[in-house]
Length: 554
Ligand SMILES: [Zn+2]
Image (cartoon, rainbow, N blue to C red):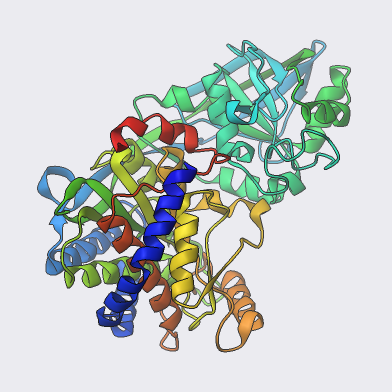
């Protein structure tokens, strides 16, 4: 691993001069084109670009027309630019009956107030009667960190009760095992999706995650709101390998009471879970029951994929991506606007990918193939990229990297750039090196505990082992420094993010986005013209998945 990275670093150093000379001749992204793409994609006519709507049809036709004009070869299904992405929609019309039995006494729970449950398995009814409950600590099985909370426990027919985040989050740093999960920084093992998947792999009938605000990094309201919406998943043949029948969260108070009824102290059991010697604990005398109807339907959305085939290693691929979807039409804001235009999120990212394709269209073809992907379903849970990772159009084993954009910096030139989360791959080093060539630095993730790494499409590819990043743009602006960058960011998050007001603006300054596009151009060009394989660092959660296909990269 280290060797490969040194080789990459040496190559960067060697080619640095040539890259500079080349760069002088390279055309930069065109602010007028970026603006025009964003203005069109985020116009009211595109209805907020929700999957499987008229807005989708317009959006994917627009992207495909751009690909065609730039000479990209279709790389979707059946010689088209479109990859069908079937999504399954799950609605729980209610009522949901849910409760515990404690020493023979029923204890009803209130859906949305005490507990939320949903299911992502194709079924019309969930009916669980008196399933035993087992506390499995953090529910982590991480051989590379020498940590296994399951200890071979049989979860068949049982409900796993699990803590959110990973064992480090609330551990005393003086504990000798502290640091295996990167301290406060959230690892994959801390994510709620991981909890469901890991317990499903161990045969659990259901999983209840204990909600605690600090380790979850959001309040119960977030859990409640997201579970009040229809749930989506990609259509999978192996859904039961990833999803237990019942997936849910319980309020901390409910857990405390549940442990108490079983003669256990929640805080004491939680402390025990912060040890590698933790053993699963059956909550004695306690069972879980629930009964509710599930309505499922399938919609078909689309990823939009074009490529420039490589001249030397066409089977090896560098991917550029950005999600095209947004929230569609929803509840009105104070002005009565119901269209969630998603101009910054993420028409801006799509415009950047289209500009990258245009820049490469004017350059000599690269040694490896370049793919340009508009992902669908990001806002429904990274589903277009998840589907792509399960159905790649070029093998993942020989996919060098995904360079993803989600939200561009439209606040002007920056002295820095930033990555979403601690990516922990050789791509980080490339970003640092090529940013340095631009005279820029990389600002470390400000809030690694919030898990932003897990909330953009690159994560779907990372889970499948492919080195992948999302660049989130700089905040140290030439004009006004960090204070101005932070203010612009806060203004966006509070007044426009995921609101109808995320609309195209005439006053944007594209210079920062152009820097980030140039950075991705340089990295992509380097990766596409050199036979290098940036790898995950030894500590990365995704290294084991990548190592399984190492033979394909010799
Ligand atoms: Zn986004």
